[in-house]
Image (tube, rainbow, N blue to C red; front, top):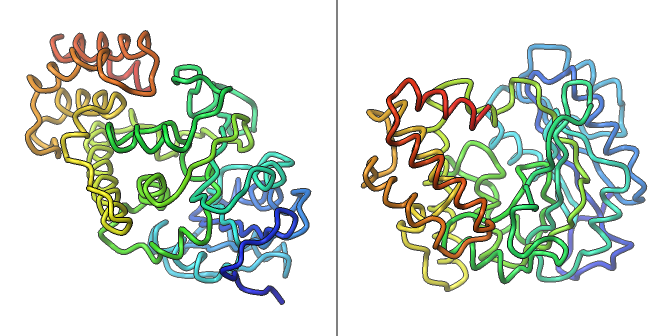
Amino acid sequence: MRVRYSESPPKHCDLLFSVVIANYNYGRFLRQAIESALTQDWPHIEIIVVDDGSTDDSADVIRSFGEVVTAIFQENGGQRVANNVGFARSSGDVVIFLDADDVLVPGALRSIASVWRTGLTKVQVLMERVDTQGRPIRDVIPKIRNVIPKIPPKLSPEAIRYWAYETSEYPTPPGSGNAWARSFLRKIFPLDANCDSFTDSTCIAMAPYMGDVETIPAPLVLYRMHGGNDSVLSASTSNYGREITRALKRHNAACKACTMTGRPPPPIGTLFCAPHLLQLRVASLRLTPEQHPLPGDSRFRALRDALFIPFRRNFERPGFRCLIAGWSIATLLAPKNIARTLIRRRFV
């Protein structure tokens, strides 16, 4: 029987990892995700699989593992609800919300444990993009080659906190690339309906304000690209506005974290200083301007922000910021058919 998390920080060798896998109709990938957790060379691990009302063969895959995993079956409620349930059932000092189509690299948990310390909200790692068959296809994320300072030396928690506050962005992987401190998650879970529907969005936004973020500059998770990923923005023109709405929810979460820790909340204007969000704003303003969700935004404001991006302090290298500025200006000023092509090539 597992002993629930206590307030006394455990030694590295005693860390209990909880791997929570929320699954919906990813039966074709789920077995590999579970096996990647089961085969980790770490003695203290629990695996909790929450099936969120799947209609494929996911239930059979989960049941085939027997009692080595904790299986929860529920009606479809979305990722946020599924991870709320999984976290409530977990007991680990460190929690990883592993997407059902992603894979933990052998030795991932041992690497995370080696840098774990009191005061962390999360340890983040790099993720290697792979195809449906698990073959490498693209660069790792986040793209640290564009980051100031380069890794190595590692990104400092202080630098991450500064960038998050000044631009609402910092170099971070999506969900599976983050190992969360239970002491942090306990303060914000369960995530309510005001939060983004994807768990990582809220946690990533709040983490720098409530503790330290440590970075391991190694690809310890495989990020599977298969056409059905939420990150495939070019699948629908409405996806760009959706991502801006998510950015607004992350800003609200950051403000909540600041309130909880006695910090002044970041102003809404930080959203207009973010290089990645600028590109999403440009795409939304050109493709679906009538649905653009960012108050006070316009093509003129985006153009002005693009001109200033190379000169604002940010974690991106100046040359990369110039590329962002150039693409943004060209896309804002080009005829719509050319703008559509530029957007498609950028977010392919």
